[in-house]
Length: 136
Image: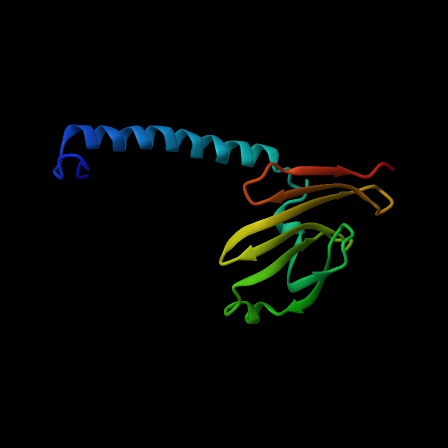
C-alpha cells in the first residue's frame, strides 16, 4: 500500500492497513455470530419443509400472503423473488426476499396449535430483528 504523504511504500501505511483489518474483522465476526444466534429458526429440519418461489406478496398482514408462484425452472433468470418455506400443514414458516442471491428481508413465523400466528421474527437487512408476538 502506498503512503499518501510520501507517495511510496512505508511502514506507516502497512500499519494503517493492519489496524483497519483488526477493527473490521472482529466486527464482522461478531455480527455474524450475533445474527446466527438471534435468528430463530423453526424446529423443523429443512427436509420437512417445502420450498416454493413467488414474484411478490399481497396485503399488509402477517404472515405475508405470497403471490405469483414461480416454477423452479423459471428461477434461473430472476434477480428478485420471494422464497417461502412451508410445513406439512401448509403453513408458511419462513419467508425470504432474495435480491441478487442475498437475503434482503426474512420473516420467521411460529403458530399456535390452532393454526393462528403466534410470533413473527422480522430481519430487515442489517437492522436488529423485530419480534411481534400474537397472544393466544
